[in-house]
Length: 81
Image 1 (tube, rainbow, N blue to C red):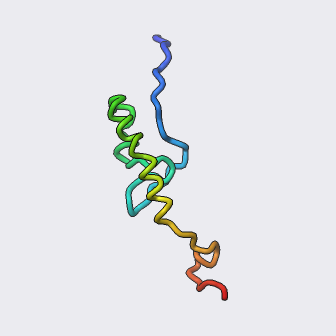
Image 2 (cartoon, one colour):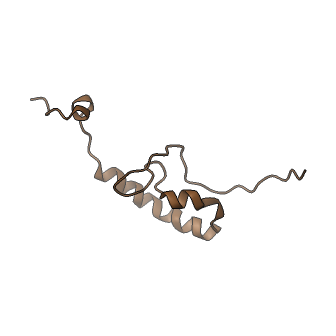
Image 3 (cartoon, rainbow, N blue to C red):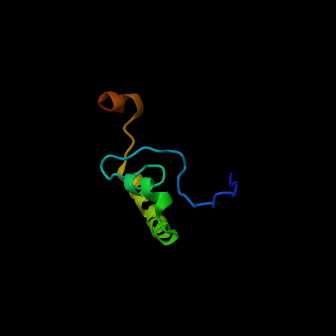
């Protein structure tokens, strides 16, 4: 059996794999499902091009979200006076 080490492939994955439904981006790394699934088969250039766009994607995800107020927000209760 050939035991050559596999080449290291750069990945933006931070092991927080949750897809944001409005944009289709992962909130951890900023990639789409298609980009995540095809990552290993992409050329290094294609991966680099996606990596360049990720900081802006992630910033967009976080700037669009507002804190909902903990338990009150989850239950849809009005803010406390």
